[in-house]
Amino acid sequence: MSIYSPVVTSAYQGLVQEATANSDGTVDINDCSSIGVQGSYSAYVSKPKQVSPPSCVSSFMAGTLSVENP
Image (cartoon, rainbow, N blue to C red; front, side, top):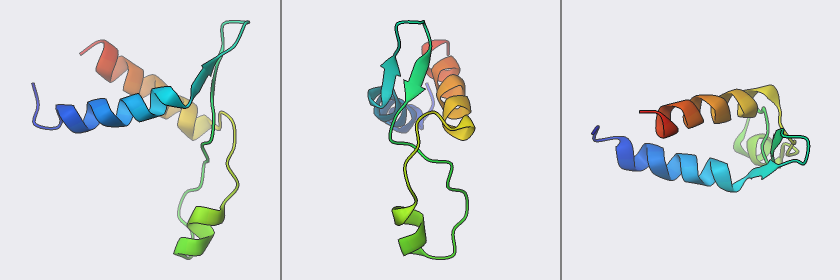
């Protein structure tokens, strides 16, 4: 067990709370954004949220693999 395990588990649980399973077997990651680097804090926090941008989906997949299959 890594010293980072509690932090990783907590972050993963937060991400899972934003996931919604769809009837077609897909999963949407809600209230997420692919914001990257912004010029200011206000630009960072005011960026519109998206549903399932590629960066969030890939983070969800990597997190799931890491946490569910250690």
